[in-house]
Image: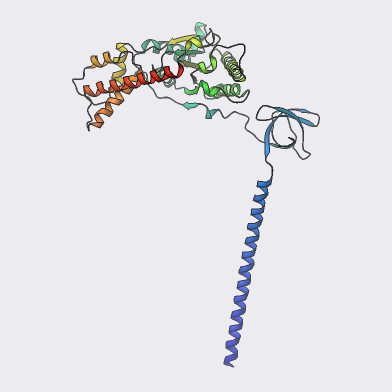
Length: 383
């Protein structure tokens, strides 16, 4: 009786173990099937031909004119299951015959913020040295109309839409633009002229249009175009397709400037080191009609710039400022800042926190050699 009970218990134990094993195998088999189906779907995606993104330009009966990313346009068929289309829609099309498969939602705006720097500058006017005349001019043309637009309305005149800052590199043109943006609490939109030259036809003009649309949305704002000569050089009658695209971008820029409201709170500041090659259409009255030359600083200007850059530095009381000013003749503001920074490094190398006269002299020598070497290399590259 006892032996039978033990056998029965073992049989039941073996049965339950078998049932559990079968159940576990079934679960594992189910999981493997699901994983296999997932892999097959993924494999099918790799085998499927990719679709191309196009734009509907026009509809003709039951066909559509689509524009490809490279600018080419084709008359193509529309798939039966495709939603209703209209000009301007983004669509997916087969690569082989360009049949429109379906409509997609696309951002019609150019990704303009990839090409510009948008900021709220905090540069005070006392950080600008040796440019009192230029500071006065830019305040009259940019700051006053933004702060007191009613004054111009009462007088009955229209303030300039923009200015052109021109002069040697490193003299403080960008600093002036940021200072006036800070004083008017304006959004500072900085774009380099060469960035406006795009690869495909029409994209540069579209980018210009959307930069100014962005400026209107963030007004009061200042559009600062550095190296404006990259797109506003004197036009030629014939040229390559690239040159013609630059001209199209330039014409869009002129159109945007002419389209501004007279007392609008969007101002333009162009910046160039090569005013001599600019097209006269850009600097005629009504556009960038106030030309402000930013020269290399004179002795008084260098003294003021050095005072600005050394006011937080620890240095000996017997520093001969007159000698430093004399030795830095023909230095730009950027080079004077480099001298102060290098003088600080000279002190650090000698385990000091106080800067001596010799540190400044060594810094002037090093910066002079670097500038001389860069000028030599530049002349060697361009003859």
